Each structure stands twice: as C-alpha cells, then as structure tokens.
Image: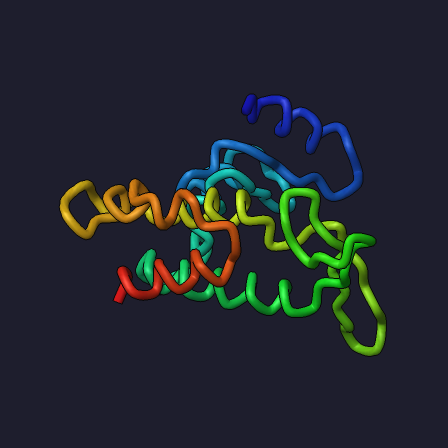
Length: 160
C-alpha cells in the first residue's frame, strides 16, 4: 500500500481517515499511524494468518484454531436451512443470530472450504516436521473433510 496517499488524504480531509495495508505485525500498526497520521488502521489478510495480531498475549496457533472452530460450530448450529433442507455446503445457508433483541442475517456460513483455508493459514507457522502444521494439513483426513465437525475433530486430536 502507498501510505503517502493515506498521508495526503489525512492532510486534505476533515473527517476520520483509516489506513489499510502494510500491517504484518503489531509494530506495523504504530508505524503506520505515525507515518500517515490516520485515525485508525485496518488489517485483513494478515488477520487470517494471525487472528491474535492485536492481542498482546500472543496465543498459540493451536489455541487460535480451537477458538475459531468453536465459533464456526456456533454459527453452524444457528444456520437456517436452505430450500433443499441442508444447512451447510458450498452454496451456503443464511445464518441467523440475535444480538440484543435484534435478529441479524448473513449469507456467510462455516463453508468447509473457508474453514480449511483459515485453519491452514493459522497453522502455517507451526513448522515442517512430524506433527507440524504442514504435516497435519497434508493429511487426506483434513483435505477431504466435508463437514466442519470432521475438521474440528481431526484438528483437536492433533493439536493437543
């Protein structure tokens, strides 16, 4: 990202400006804010690899994957059936959640391809030896799982 553009926008506008890009670690946030003068920083791709990017405690990848799978299971349990009666799969289902009395609907669901992709990114940093993230992700059980519950069961056994 060209942070000089963000810096110019911040100087020219009288509204809050958010910077986006070049955030790969916690330290990048402070550097980005210092350089641009922006009111905040957004991050997307790096958060897929490290959902605890802004967490000072730096939880272990296995703990992050476990929390992620718990959230997926909670979303999956609230999925509304599609017209064909299914609640998950490649084409998805509408997910309903209630927050402070307001029902919210989303077309996002714990799609198995998305779950595998997110888990893979979180586990990439565990090394390459036996029992490593890479070795776990190469197994057919992980790659061929068709349900979030199967991915969950498989990963929890191997990440203890």
